[in-house]
Amino acid sequence: RGEWVIFLDADERLEKASVPTLRRLLRDPSVSAYEVCVVSRAVDERKNLASVYGYNPRLFRRADHIRFQYRIHESILPSVLRANGRVARADVTIDHIGYAGSDRDMQEKFRRNLTPLRLDAADFPDDLFVLEKLSQTEMILRHDAEAESYLHRILQLLDQGAAGDAYAIKAAHTCNLLSELCLWNNRLTDAEVHAKSSLRIAPRQYQAHALLSRIYEKQDRIDDALAETSQLLALSMAQPVFESDVEGDCNVLTEDILYKQSLLFRKQGREVHLITQTLEAALHANANHRPAQADLSVIYANIGDIDGILRILAAVPRTEQQSAALLYLRAQAQAKSGSASRAIDDLWAAFAHGLRSDDLIFLLVRLLNEQQREAESVPLYEEYLGRHPQADDARMLLLQLLQRLNRADEAKRFAAASIGSIVSAEMKAEFSRVAAASVPATISSKSL
Image 1 (tube, one colour):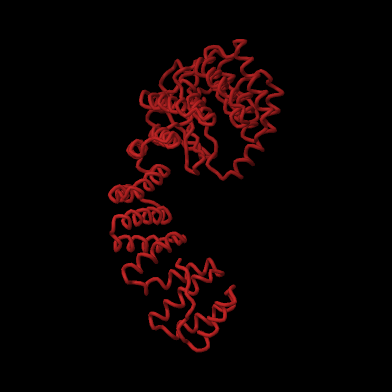
Image 2 (image 1 turned 30 degrees about the vertical axis):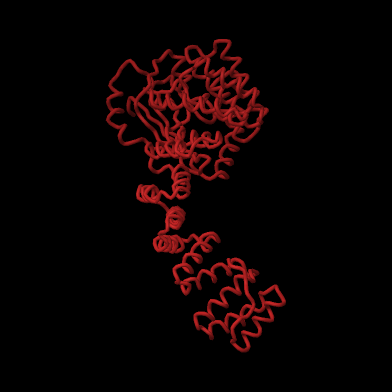
C-alpha cells in the first residue's frame, strides 16, 4: 500500500544499521529504484565464512509499469530502465546467508537453479544478466564447456555496445571468470591472457591480480606471483573492497594477501625472519587468522620463541582442538629450551584437550623418564596401545614399567590380557611366563 517497496528473499536479512538511511532515501523524488549492497556469506576453501559483495535493485518506487522479470534471480531493473527511470546506489546492506550451507546443499541449490536459468536464456538470448547468472551456475556445476561458451557470448554482446556505460565492470568481470575457468583446466597461458585483459579494462580491481598471482605460482614464476600480491596489498590499503571497479569482486582481505605472501616467500626459500614478519603482519590485521596462527606457531616452536606462542594463545578464544595444537607447539619450544617441567604441564594440558598423537605421547614419555616421573607414563602407554594393538615393543615397555613400579598384580593382569594380541612368538612366551608366575620380564625392548 505504500509508495516504496523493498523485497528480501527468505534467506536474506536487512542490516539494522541501514534502517535510518533507508528512511532518508525514500524522500528523494528523483529516484525510481535503489541498488543496495547484498553481502553473500559463503564458505571458502578454508571452511571459513567469506563475503562476496554485489549491488542489486531491491528498493523501488511502486508504479503500474514496474514488473519483475526472469524465472529466477528475478529483477525489476529491466522495467525501470525501459521507463527511463533513474537508478541510484544506496548505502544499505542486505545480508544473504543462503550460500553458507554445506557443499552438498549448495550443489543441489545450483542444480535446481539451472533449468529456470536455461529457460530464461532461451527467452532472453541477449540478456547480459541472464547470461552472467547462467555462466556462473554452469561453472559452479563444472559444466566448463557450456560456461565458457556463455562467457564468450557475453563478451561478444559487450563488444557490440549492449552494456552501455557498464562495459568496463561487466567486461572485466567476465574476463576474470574466463581466467578462472582456464586456470581450473590448467590452461595457464589462456588464463593469463584473460586476467591481463581484465586489468587493461579496469586496472584498479583485485580479482585479476589475485588470479595472476595464482597463475604465476603454478608456473613457478614466484617473483611475478609476489609482485601481484604487492599490487593486491596496495589496492587493499587504497580503497575498501565494496568500492572496487568490478562489482561482485571477492572480499580480498589484507591478512589473506599477507598470508599468501608468506607462502610464496617460503617457496622462494627466503629467510625465516621475513616469513615471520609477514605472518605477524597478517595477525596484526586479523588476530583470528587461523592459517597464519598455525604457521607462525610452528616457526616459534622451531626457534624456541615461547613468548611468541604465548601471544598467539592469548590472542583470541579458540576450540579445544586448536588450543591443544598450540599447547603442543609451546611444549616443544619449552623442551628445546630446557624447561622440561613446563613442557610436561603443557603436554598434559594438550592431552586433556583431546590431542593424543603419537608424537605427543613419545615426547611426554621421554620427558617424564628424564624427570624420573615414569609412573605418570602408564596411561600414555595404554593410550598408545589402544590405537596400536600390535605394537609388541610398547607392550613390553609397559610390562617392564609396571614391574619396576612394584605393581606386580597389575603387571600379571596386563600380561595375561596381552597374550592374544602379541605377534612375536618369543615375546608371547615371555608374557605367558609373567602372567603365570609374575616374575620380571627378561626380554629387552626398543624404546618408543
